[in-house]
Image (cartoon, rainbow, N blue to C red; front, side, top):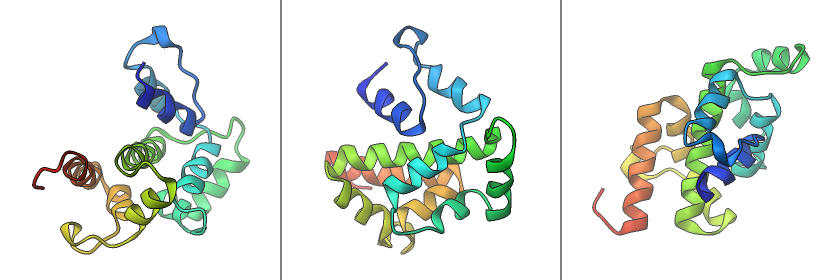
Length: 144
């Protein structure tokens, strides 16, 4: 397991073993993350935006998940949370600062049609890939 995978697992509240190989995180997400993963990810990305978690999972649905036995997210909900956590980890790799990563993810970007990267990433996997491409271009100095 790479350092990136370890930090992503920690952010999601997972503790996969080193010996499980590269698919351990994917398996854990497929089984459903804990409801607390939403809070951990949102608190990292936008501690001052209480509504971010409800753009990932609708407010009533999240409230139901919090009351349910086992307090687990569905596979699709878990995938959205993990997708945003992955974007956070990439932004941290590029910016090396939580404040700088938050600013980048929260401010509209011209290459994303003036939408904030975190919002674009929440909507779809393709949106997340566009944000990853943008971050890769920033990191490696390539044209996007």
